[in-house]
Length: 597
Image (cartoon, rainbow, N blue to C red; front, side, top):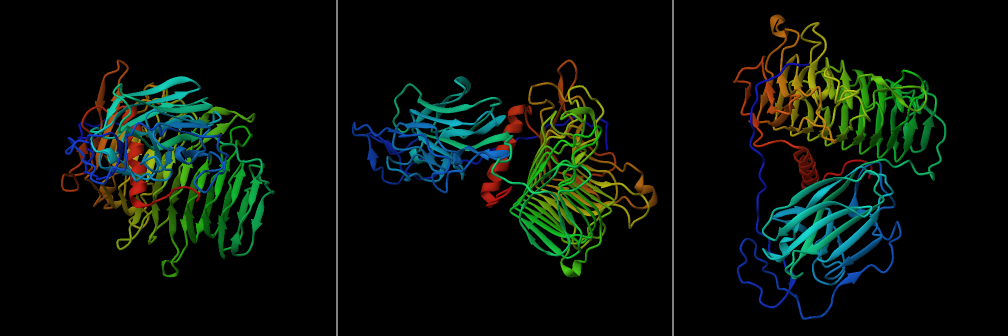
């Protein structure tokens, strides 16, 4: 792992394409025949005629009104557009969920579209509008975007405001129909009442179709429902499908112990414990749609247990699970058969706070920790068809501690079937005290770690592509040994600051390719590639001077490391928030849902 600075570079930012959509809108007489940027071509069937078509919610919505209203917030991130309204008023027909305002009838909205960009999730309103929600002080961030919907062409103008417990947290200023989506990120820690307000821009409410898009409540901490009745630990000794709610309050005893090599499937379950949640040897294990909660071990100097701890693994499939406050996934040695279709698949999981902090034995934590990972594969050699993809991993400073989010130690795919690590969103990897600890080796994705015992033991044949890494301190992407590792089309940004604005003391480099153990000298370092990546990695000195430290490539030639781009302009905390919006849009565009379904 590199602790050395690389040369500063600058990188062009990603622009948003502007498309022309043709949608109808409410309004008044005299619609321009050729708006400046966008032209609604469908018939406008709600021309303003002096009739008041404003709307107000008659009574607070129950927690479950229909299938579109979620019963409660969930751990991690929650979609605000699915939450019930406490109060709601709107200037033109009802407020719409996951649709534009449309006309004045309920449910007549269209696909949310701003500046040619479509959004699957959000809230369609019309100035003047007020929508309130009860967060119960359970979440810490609220992110999203605002804009005038394309269904009114280039018309319309509005001001978007966010209030928390009556205090204004955000004001968009005037947003016009010619503008692209404008992103926001606000701190809602301690907020019970969240209020979304849309006013006109002082020029009347005509055509003010105002969209709130990709509205996500982040880092929500929701105690598992008291309606869940947990049983004690379970020992599985034969194959089959299992569903249940299991817990272990003894850190030495896993909540689920798998003691068979027959295929075991765990589905639609809740598992929590002070040690490993699922542990076994020679497992053929599938876990889907399951919530895993790590508890403080409450034993001095002990860290949280793994979500899955697998030794001498035969097969592992983990799909659409929640990992909250756990020690992640550990795989040590693979003994599966490619001919039997056995491999490792870790897909579409939602992960919050990989927690290697050590317990003080009294429900708190010491200022020391143990290096854990979201995924560590150790001595998994010559595995075919392995895949780690479409996972969302968010680690908060002072609530987590880990090494790399994904670490491959002496692990290899095959020339015909490289291990694929792709399309993951990873945010956060921090020292115990991130504003003061200057030495920290953790980061985003590292391959080639470990053994130098010979060609058969080194890391090899791994493809890492189309991932997004944000604010992971020491590095975002790294190749430190082995051969035939290919990194391409990845993104990484870091402002060099924590959410409170303080400097990350151990901030280092965006990506490095470094033969850390001189494998070239014994013929086991070659064909390691870094190409077509986009990085903006900010470092800040004690005087507040900033510079980019995007790449450090001491062991790579231009034939293997090329066409890597540098971010254009400063990377700020707002840039990091925008990168999460890029991720949400990517999920929508690809029809991917992460976490339990």
